[in-house]
Image 1 (cartoon, rainbow over the protein chains, first blue to last red):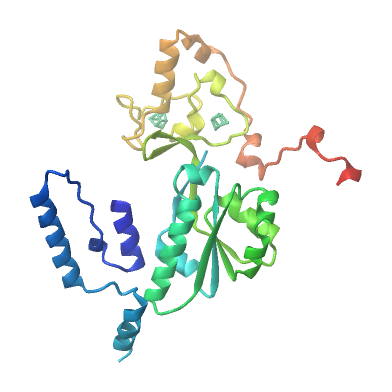
Image 2: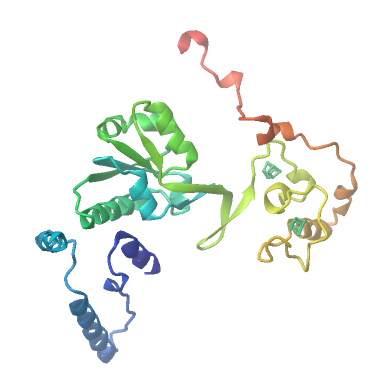
Length: 64
Length: 227
Ligand code: SF4
Ligand code: SF4
């Protein structure tokens, strides 16, 4: 996971976009908490800038 | 094996600048087993570059291919077409692989994606350590199978030096003192007398000091007319 985060950072993406959580099937509460936390985090960071439908906007913005 | 380490992505971006069509070439031998430049790393490097270029707002093409061994012409022949189409080849082979590509494809601009580090082995999962410096005149038979050229920080032939402390090397306390290892091993095997034998000076001409080296095996060469 460290390695993947490092690669993302080098590419220029937020390393926090990827996370690994170890859970057993008996840990429903923890699963919900992790999923909620990740959803919140991604919402704050915004969509993946590499998605081509969004890339146009991003560059137009930076060119403005 | 030859052990190497990946260069940072920023350096790869800078090394490949100017090339619209980048070909990442992995190698299926040493650098595969040290997780630096095999098929998996070539694919990850290519997609990392694609993402990074895209974020930078340019649409350069990056593809990847891996050959069994980058240091032999036969394997390089298999990728001749792809190499020809590339503006720049980013080799994930060791320094030998990079040079083999440069020599085999004189028209191609090739750059290294790895820092070739040493000849060594994995000592535990995720850890590689240097073991041989290719001195050309192996003395492991005198040192209990522990190389003082590669593993003693000063390549001493008559160690340990005064800086050996508690089995650790003064140059880096994390490095075991090679001469302590040699002494302990020979003691354990009851062969300490090996160290008492007077040795002639080591032949350093067989090492890098004698310039680039070459081995010619006449028995293996193709006869002139067969060439
Ligand atoms: S003595 Fe020379 S050839 Fe033998 S292991 Fe050491 S560096 Fe390598
Ligand atoms: S402490 Fe041991 S390994 Fe380090 S330089 Fe001295 S003899 Fe060599």
